Image (cartoon, rainbow, N blue to C red; front, top):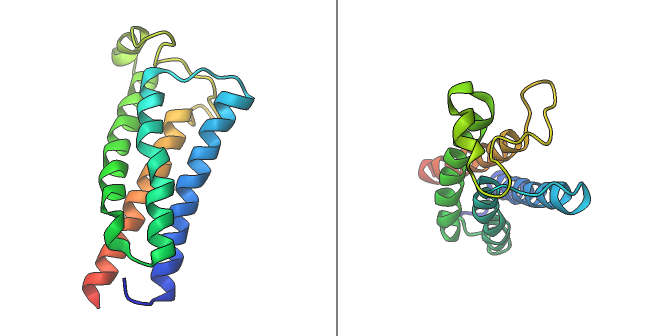
Length: 142
């Protein structure tokens, strides 16, 4: 990554988004006492490494080492979307009932009628994925 303040700022925003998502998931489970379902665990598995990946990329100022982050965030978007659909679509609601110890259709939070934990995770994955694509396009333009 060339020395560009804009690119470095975007990389720090990506890292901060991953860190906020990590801290948010720990807040819900450790402080609020919400037990994560299987799909929540998959989303955590995909999100937590992003803090290290993008942190290292920001420190080294090298986007090329963050390619795994793009892949993990892309997969995370799909898992979050599927999890959200299990919670919100009546046709898939039954699917989430047999998702392990805690049913995946459980809604611990439901702000404004649509903001659930998988929704928050999905937004985080989308922000990370889109900003990474923006950085890649900036690199190609130089």
